[in-house]
Image (tube, rainbow, N blue to C red; front, side):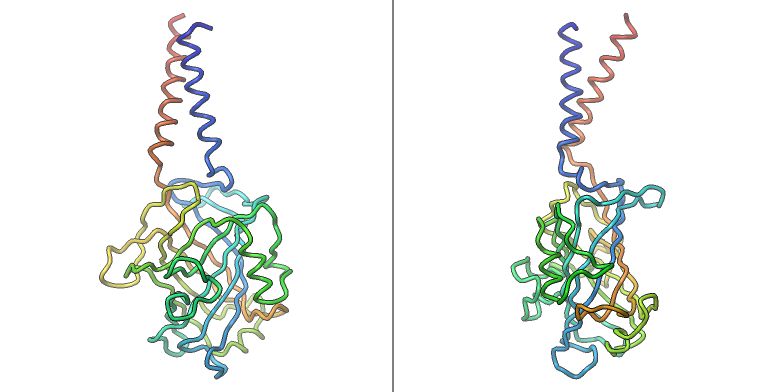
Length: 281
């Protein structure tokens, strides 16, 4: 192999190694937009002890994400053997009426809750772990504290929350504000829906996250980094103290990082150079 061909080959190998060594390989992304699907269980903390969900009460939950998929649909990939989990802690905010709920992050309402130590305004923190120790489907945790311990024992994947953005929100519409009715409901029965627009801090996804159309009201630019929502299900059979399940999806948009583009470009230049050398010979 002559010197020029050797240099081109080295460039191509460097580019390939750079892409493989990137932390994105632990989770499969489908640029530009990747969807994440999970199941979770939710706990109700009745702050004022009146038996209904109203202002000042908290909803705390743990989630386990199983697959990522392309948007539009067409491709998907399991997250296993890694375990991607989440802990969320929300407080019912003023303006909530009946079954229409507005939520704010608990750690900006005077109670730090389960996300103590995370940035103020964080509504949910995701964790990436090499051990699959949480099972929200067969519910292998026995209490709120135990569920949270199993969910937050990995490395921070990212924090997501409001962070002063007027476009960020987390709202829900439920058929009832009685948690006992939800807890007694069938696991396949729907008790409402929720939607959220959030932004990210402490991003360890290996991706540069772009903005997506997602808005909670006037005063912003109509964009956040995460958009998602879910369906609230009954708590039939839950033995950890959780009162409900939910099926949640969210999506992110990946923006190619300059370093990744540079490595890819160098690799393509090397491959092109080698191809041209073959054609000339």
